[in-house]
Picture 1 (tube, rainbow, N blue to C red):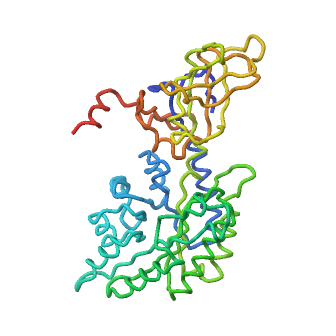
Picture 2: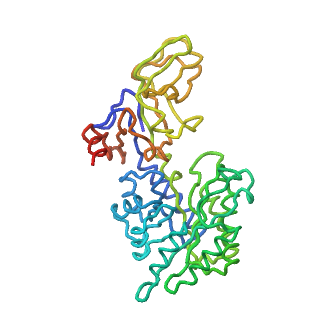
Length: 404
């Protein structure tokens, strides 16, 4: 899309803003579904709400036939409010509530148990005249021991699920088997990794088979979660992920009978989003030249962890003057470390120049605070037409949100 400063932005929004390319979003999803279907035809794709819960996105994925993956009572209610039926909701995470747990289990959602409290709630549902109900269970494995150097927190381990290695998972399986109206039909094995490598997913798939064999589980579905790379050069492709998963899963499970569930998030929504900012001032100090923009790191790197961005500089007019060795691109907030990157060996920027950050759809809108400025507006391009799908909140909206 042409976002040069001489081209007006979609009517009704100003910088900073997020722009979505629907064509790219559709292409991402098509590639994902094609790769998954080719390797494991009996499959379910559930969009992970936590990656970006923009209502327009949730409606888009709903209409494309995806399930919704919710990891809290709030996300569960949001999925229902967005029109996802119970049977197309996967309910994960350790922060379910009793009310939403009962509603999900009795309504036919895919519920993956993640705490001892949920086992007790399940027992409450096991009474004459109820059920039968199906559930899954989240397994905790020592990923670092199996894939050294790849788990996100190293040897500190994960807090999610029931531990396979120390017998807690076996105890939970035995507890569920003692219930008359509950069927344990699924296994959930999502774990975060710092590498997102093929070896991690091969290991998770292998662990599913290992656990099923160890506890004689007859599983209807195996859920390996998300965390996939999406379309980056020199990173695994969707087909490579599912090739490895299918090869390992196929050692234990029949692809005609067992459903593979995956929960993509950023791999689908990151690349279609761009974040558009403008230079509002240029300041020269004894330390540096600062290009101050109306954007901020809090909008595209809210956890302050990134070391670089996919960006392009779009000038309002041809540059004049020699290149500067370094220009510090800064945000609008009061925090001195709201500095996005250093532009090196580039002619001095001018007020009105645009800096566009690409691949900004994952874990940005959902984590960005209303800090100093309110949320940026969001618009979607379909063909040549633009539609504003989230306006920038006004002061009245802020008061309403933060008042009883």
